[in-house]
Structures are given as structure tokens and as C-alpha cells.
Image 1 (spheres, rainbow, N blue to C red):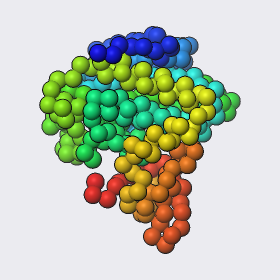
Image 2 (cartoon, rainbow, N blue to C red; image 1 turned 180 degrees about the horizontal axis):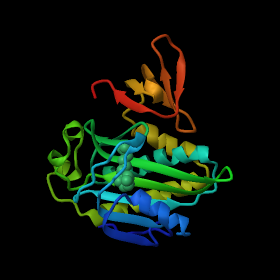
Image 3 (cartoon, rainbow, N blue to C red; image 1 turned 60 degrees about the horizontal axis):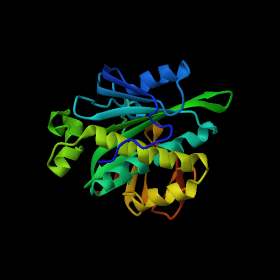
Image 4 (cartoon, helix red, strand yellow; image 1 turned 90 degrees about the vertical axis):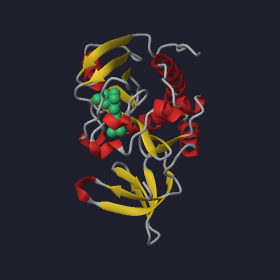
Length: 254
Ligand code: BTN
């Protein structure tokens, strides 16, 4: 098995049995000067957070971790980190022979069911980024039947897919190895390389999608691409192209 083989990601790892949210703990540590690459892991979260203000169920049996980063970027580039992290998760799962796909912007799917999600939170200081925390949840050994009704049907875990117990420490080190590689590309501004991988593993591009945008706006069309800022490009039924920066994406047949 592969061990942790990174230069700086995971040099400091804080492990907890229980926290409210590893993102919250990571932000706290970042405020007190935690260095780039510090990782916070918890066995369970009592107030796990998802995107768009949703709660994220985080019982024992999943991987709940957050990485503290201090990239020298403008806050607008932070959302690209979510895509880069998605690529790292998908590559990790593909190393386990799982056909992982990425749904824009941040869901990792196996056979159209969600196995992992990412929550990136940036903290800006004088219009540049002070720190970013990237939170990753992976349903490793969860029995998804214990999740609440509305999400249960849409989720899958690695152990359910592979029919065996998963060694969480192996996945964590594999993921951190992949992450460091991609984060280095990000810092070298090799966005095209990352986007190439993202498109290659995307479930969204080429599908007809419905996007629920803030303020109740709904947009439908073919997802034709993604631009260098990580925005999704939609071709509407009338042929107009639209750029989507944030929202909830529903793929037809979801
Ligand atoms: C989503 O798909 O909506 C994002 C889910 C992100 C969950 C992870 S679990 C570790 C980290 N801590 C949190 O509270 N959320 C993220």
C-alpha cells in the first residue's frame, strides 16, 4: 500500500474523534497561524457543513478532513481550488479501480450516486487571500441507509461499491499525495492541465442540465464546457451561451 509521500501537505495532521466541523476547526487554526498544508481530520462531525448552507451528515464511517492552504492568489481563483480538489479525489478513487466521475462543481459520483463532496472557504485580507480551507468528505465505510431520507437514495460509499471494508488511512494518504501534486500545478498556474483532467472525468460536460441558481432562478441547457475560472458554460435551448459561477446542478436522469 501507498504511504504518505508528500513534501508539505500533511506535515501537521490534527486528528479528532469528534468536532463540529473540520472546516471550522481549520479556520480557527489558520487564524492562529497554522502553516500551509496543515490537515484536520475527525472521525465524526456534529455540524458538518455542505455547500449552499446545507448540512452534511458526518457519522463515524466516513473521511472528514480539511486542508489549510495559503496560496498567493486573488479570492476569485479560490473556486478553482474546488475543481482541482475534485480532480484529486476522482484520481484517488480511480486508483482503486472505481469509475469516479465529477459533477460540476464539486460532487464525486459513482454510477450517478454521490460518494464525496468538497467545501472550499476562502478568507480574504485586503483583496488577496489570507488562507483557504478545503474540506473534503468521502463516504468510505458508511452504510448510506443510515442517512436521512432525502439524501439516502443519492449517496453511495466506497465499501458499498467495492463490497469490502476500506482502509481509511490508505485513502487519506493516497488522496493527500494526489492533492499535493495538483495543488503544485495550481500554484504554477497550470490551469489547463487541471481542467483537462477535470473534463476527462466530468459527468456534467455533454449532459443536459438544470441549474438552480441563487434567488430561485432556474436555467436549463446543454453543459458544453468549463472556462478557466471554473465557471460552467451552458448552451440554452435558444442557442445562447450562459456562464454559471455558482448554483446547484441537476443532470437529466439524476
Ligand atoms: C457538499 O457536497 O455540499 C460539500 C460537502 C463537504 C463536506 C466536508 S466533510 C469535511 C469538511 N467539513 C465540513 O463541515 N464540510 C466539509
